[in-house]
Length: 169
Image (tube, rainbow, N blue to C red; front, side, top):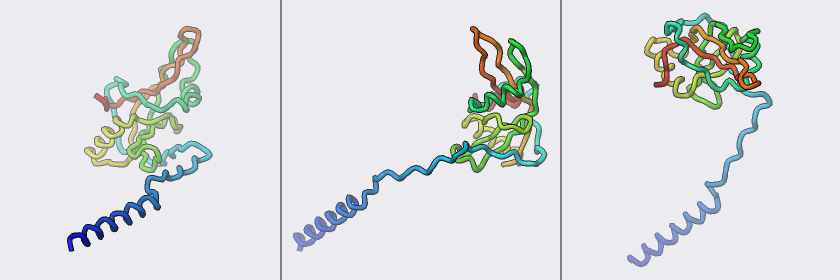
């Protein structure tokens, strides 16, 4: 009887292993096709629920703006060889449908997309929104487009800095 049970267990195990090998669950899934144009969120047509301020310290830098350098250069305006420090009102938009980052926060200046908060800063920022009971809503803060000055015969990149409390410590 014990021999029959042992043989049955071995046979069932063999069939399970065969089924696993035959179906090949480790087979890589095909990647979805890349869209023809890069993803960019839309600026909602709503008034900001809150205006943030950190008394003009501008300690939060927007990231991922390398593809927005032409936009930032246009926003910086004519500043000669000196670095720009052009003021704007920034609109901060929680981007819940971003296919690359689930907690993204998009940053718009003058209605134009200029980048995102870093992933860590986005999480902290969303926690602040929840604490203020305005979760998922559009907010604003003062901002500056900086950079573009001449250094070692070349122009520096442009960055956006925000006047909100420091989100990464």
